[in-house]
Length: 631
Image (tube, rainbow, N blue to C red):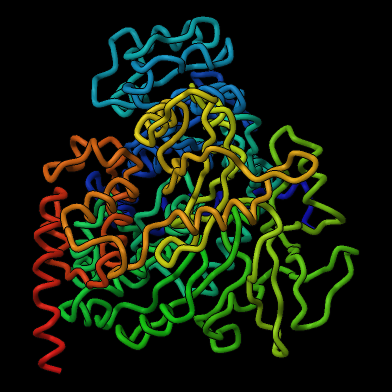
């Protein structure tokens, strides 16, 4: 066990960046590119700012901004200074953001000025906290005077400390902290309870360094690595397997765009033009790539590209095999949780850990599968997967009971059910805990149900996950109205989004007269799921009817969680509340399932409104008999 007083290995990454890497080398490539030299300069300027704001080692600072460049720079500067970063979802609803800011109890908040204008941010801060808007505006001339007077005694108002312009008035520090212990908290990421009790995962410098060391060795990374990762930065897969890993490997991170379905060809095109070596993504995106036409067969064929890293959710074995055979490239399937920094088990790229259909084997940590008694189970027997290693979190922030429930005798109880085969390869077979993993995002059904029950006219609700080929699982809710009240899916969705983030909004909402319950009044989930299955639309070609437009509108209503009567052929992302990038992906996949057709990339590009979808589907259906006849 390492000494608690040992200096953080993370500091060496920054020292190498300044001493050994050419300043002009690209650190991040994207809409706001960042070179290593500029990163070092901003790190030193921010270190000065932190001191002027009264921030010290082990203090906490919140980051909540849509500006990736700002998130990356501020996060790394906090890391280097030994200040704990708390990275929040900038798209969170106002109540969620207020709850998380209060829970973080931070001394500084770097937040988009639009969120400040929305209200609630200031009242959620502790009394001595500094508020720094992230904006393009210039810092005011009185800034340095305010810093001298001390911001902890007088909180700045929005606009007086605008990032990044504020850095122009700051002298870079010459001496960065050299006494950051490896036991220092690097960051806190909240994983659940954003509508009730937030559960923040505490990751230390030692945890983070251990994970990065494993990544670099397991993936074979070095200073020639060109990593493509556009996953969100408020999730560990974007923050650690993107930003932090790039610094640890002295590599270059590519974040050329915010992911949307119509940008998928552009994203894949960058693999060749930018000579990408590794793509980090999630199974739902892998499924979309696999649906592209033959024009994209060689998108991974460049001599620089090594493999795809699939993270955050279950990867279907058939999809995995099809993808590798078609694109002639490997997928490294990994398993981990926010509580293990990022990953713990690896299926590849080395032959010793690779077996398609599994999550491979533990690397640089220990894994066991135990029964209810806590004893190891035999190979082939299902039990709970537990992990131990330097990558396992310190605990949940200010939640000792919750920490004790999952950390027992040094072992982290994942809540996932797994089994091993005779050769020691692990498979995930289910889940003990209720978390739903949809498109790589963790959604806790209790959070969703709490929000639904707070909506006017709702008497009760229940939320659960159901298998989905594209998303791994989909969030499904059944809502029971107050007697005499009339609810609409569109109304429920609109009120939901006032209280919670869009990623928690169920993909399916069913309004039901009653919920089946047991003798003690508890909802019987098995019966609810069976009821939902019966209520789902009939398979293609059955009783739905031949009216393509009517069926497309029905698919749209289900996907965008709205009343079909509110839709028309002119409905699109600008005039339909539930139509966002993720919902657009779901809509396209649902169209393929509904009509048993395959949409080509050109179709994806042209479907902007529901009328476009009708036109494309009608064309596909008209072409189908000719293809059958030709065969």
